[in-house]
Structures are given as structure tokens and as C-alpha cells.
Amino acid sequence: MEQLNIQDNRLTDSMEMARLTCIPNLKRIWVKRNPFTKTHGDYRVTTFNLFRKTPGYVDDIVIDESGPGYSERKQLVERAPEVERQLLTLYPDC
Image (cartoon, rainbow, N blue to C red; front, side, top):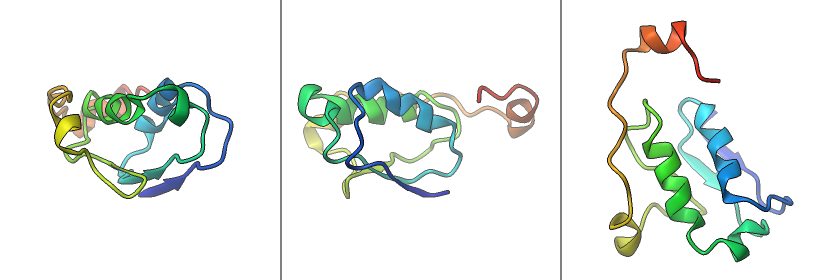
């Protein structure tokens, strides 16, 4: 799965996006109109960083049609080091 639309749900915590990091090859997510998008002003940075901390995500995901903007990029963490796929198969986190 490369794209996931979870718009218009009742997600209240931006940390719920951590669950999505278990989906290999995910490139785009739509999260508009979830409560956390109004209550957590930094939800995009939080989401980008969750994926950056997950081995295997070498490119930033796209959230609601855009990748990280200039000011968001300043707040992003370094990417997790790549882990051999064999190790991921033996010890999956998900």
C-alpha cells in the first residue's frame, strides 16, 4: 500500500500516526479534518519525524498533498540508519 486516506475520522492524538510506520512503502497519507489537526499545531512535523525514525523510509512522506515545507524541514530529525532487510524480517516491530 502506497497511499492511505484517513481523513474525517475521530483521531485526537497525532501520535496515532506512529501506527502507520509499520506499513512498508507508504508514500502518501491524507489526515485532514481529524481533531488532532486542529489541536496539535505541530502534527505534520511530528508525523514526518515518526517516519524518519523508522528504518526503511528514505524519503519523506506526503501529508495532505505536500511534503515538509521550509520551516518544517528545520525541525526534522535525522533519518534512522538503514537496517538490513533480513534483520527486519527476523525481528519485525509490527
